[in-house]
Length: 68
Image (cartoon, rainbow, N blue to C red; front, side, top):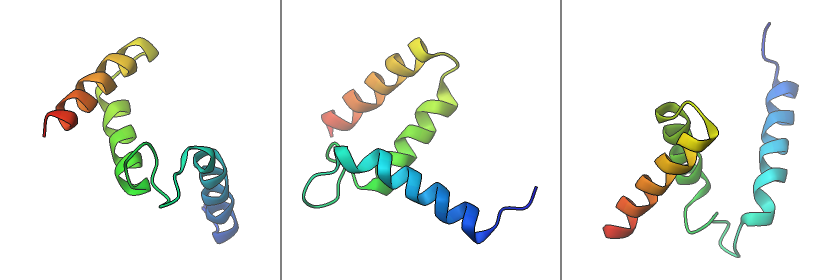
């Protein structure tokens, strides 16, 4: 299956629609830029295998980020 421009536009619109309720007046999500937020989500997804694991892994990442 080949990804078309229309497919990509639809995916970006859907992502934006999902993130918009969480964005602040600067366009950040929970204190992160959208790029940082998606990068963190990707790392959490990669490091975990279950929903329970995701919660634990995300807590570790957030705690480490809050230390610095």
